[in-house]
Image (cartoon, rainbow, N blue to C red):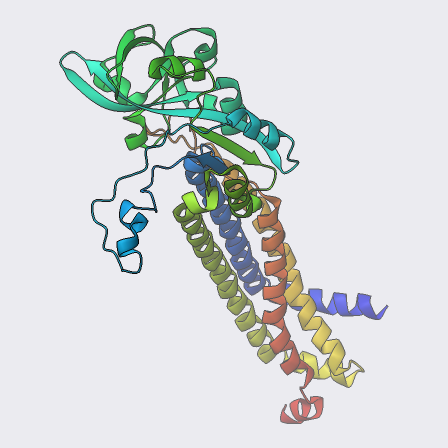
Length: 419
């Protein structure tokens, strides 16, 4: 009964100043709407930008890096054994880029429960022969099916079919930039020369476009067998083993383990792409800061409105306390008013936020660098709506708490005597 009475009194106060109440609710609605839309858009943008690199990057990459030998000839001489030697013109070790015993390594990785999948790869430096001009390029020898399964390869193939690399011998998918420079079309035959001078003709079966022009100007793709034939290597020649993990957070730790276990170089995705994670974090932080600022501003609006309401309703508050309402009851009345504004404005804000996000999601976004993206990216993560709802309630509660404390301490005798 008492709860119903407090609710009725709160409703009466709200309706008595319905214009101010409406303004406060609109402030909350606008804040939540912009909070949801801003975070959804920024999260979608982060996923898009990071996906350009992270979707195409292994969680852990095993390879052999050319490095100078640590044991120089001068250190083998007893005469200079106890000297500090300044070694100049240090030459790299004479090593192959191939990963030795790669079949055993791949079999061991397949048995590791932490590994989601493995995609072998060959990286070959080549020259594309265009008349009298040689264009520098890189051919990546891949297993087309595994590359598409773990690295979404087909999403970046803008012309032709990625599976043709497997089905058509001596075929190549050219980077979009390289294809434009050579005026190559699907079905054309191009000539490629390796760094050792070996030449081979390859049939163009598709175009690859990552959205990063520097990559698209030089990178192309062929099957592993075609690349091995191009380099004149045997069927077990592999230069990279790309590993996808079930938990990406394990990448730094497992990279160290695999490097030691298999005696190869290893790099994890966090190390290779630290700048992208930093950029995503900063953009997300700015979005949250702007959204929370909007909610705080709306909270100050509710605070001012409740303060004015208390000033104008001192007579009513005095009568309530004189008729038996305690200070706690008055406190509950104004908290109920504040929360009513917050809940009503918050619900509308969530609905409008979803509607605005859906509207942005339909806006065309056409750019030559991102051919697979047709509209602006939006992330409909329920987390944003939960955060928005919680913040709207917390903000409006705090905005109503301090005025309600003031109202609960009003002395009805002083107010009535003053009248």
